[in-house]
Image (cartoon, rainbow, N blue to C red):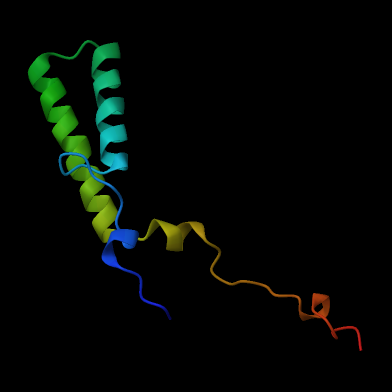
Length: 83
């Protein structure tokens, strides 16, 4: 298997936050704004969402969960399969 440089494997980051964490931060701020949370609770909610996303991204394999466990390949569709 070909090894790619590290910069091709990592997602871009802004101030140490990836795209998913920034999106989580924006969603947390919108939820706090909709429910009119006090500023301190908004701060805790934002930090909690960012930490939760970091833990989930580090410890869980979402691609493995989303992909099927077994792949079914129909060999008759390949060239020479009808012989």
